[in-house]
Image (tube, rainbow, N blue to C red; front, top):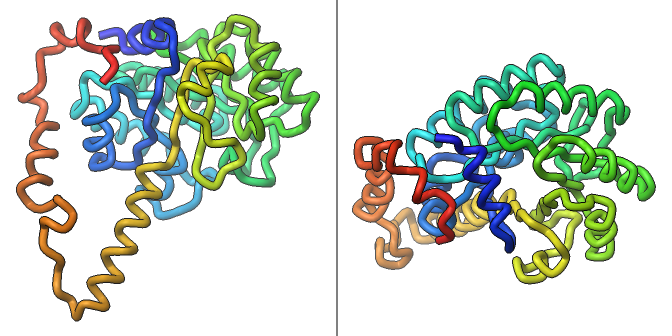
Length: 292
């Protein structure tokens, strides 16, 4: 199955392709009921797997292992994977790309940040010299066979944003991401210098970028939208509320009907992930790419 081709074709159909940020297998199970594509968020994975902020703690074997479990459970989903800066070294980045393509990832996002890295919507980001990042990106592009590659810049200075966007658009990367775009006018300016290169927009609750609908993004010429943290933040809020109620209610659980979630519904959700319940791989290609 050529997962990179499937995502590439989906993006090429027009409209905006939404990819929902997930942080563990349970959130992925829920996201798969509503959307055809997932974004394997570095922010979410650092939070859920390590209990740490998104500042460079992720080890590449952990991310590869997570994506392997995702692909086994969700053979029809697009899986776009955040690999940060490729885990520092260009050789490591290429090795990770080969591993991810082998296990069935659809694509990766490679950023131009220097270590110590930061979430793209946080202060204090530093970027690599453009030539150094382009060298790493070119090696990754030479290494991939079918994998879709998103070139990402975290530049914050206005002239540098446009300089890098134009340079990245001229590469063989499939998609361009300028992270932390602060307003609609800057989306238009990036779109103008990106030429025909598909454009990705990342919005995160409490982040730097405006909250825009898919219709608004399409009007701005955006091709892909990733939602990094809605599942993580919704779980945070729901768990905090439940624990407060449990504490104030003398430890008495609420009825399952109050939330609609109980043993039976949770088990049914997870049983769908058992690999023997899935279509054979030969049957997957015609089904991938259909909008839910």
